[in-house]
Length: 215
Image (cartoon, rainbow, N blue to C red; front, top):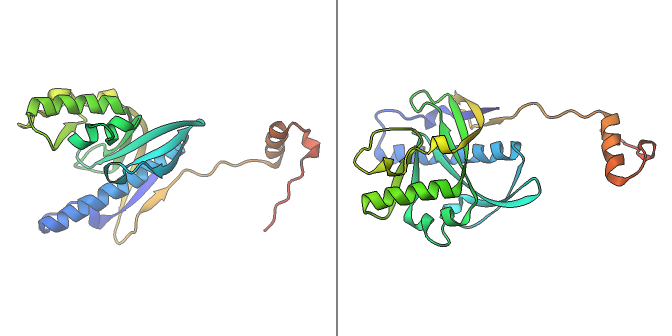
């Protein structure tokens, strides 16, 4: 799978603070949309929003089983956690799984990794960071081992080793591109295979199946 991002979303020196923040928000939005595509390619069906944490949590199904999932996007391999998300009714308290979409190398940004975490793993790490900081609001948790930068970030340990990378996605930066995702070639099915599948589903012989292709 390959993701195409507009090159103007890349960090660049010289821009205003407001412009840089807007670019970061848009890049994270694109990364979360990519995350939805990846999880659906991994057997999930993403449904409606749970209405939590700015619409980043969703009803979903995996193998016919209902599951609640959330998404986090990280350009620098640090994950944001807020006290409202940890409270009863918050995202980290409500969802079962969190998918983190992060650049494998924040300096190069040519590959994205999509991690799957149990939400409780991120919630437990976040609680430790908040307890160590003595503050509420928002804190940051690293995916990788790193130095504590004075915000008690390592109190919960690094998250990456507790998650599963379900997909890696090549990133292409396009001048003037609108962005998008190129998925692998679609699965091809022969007529005979289709008849066999339908016959098994409906409990009839293959000879009773007629398939008409129009167009």
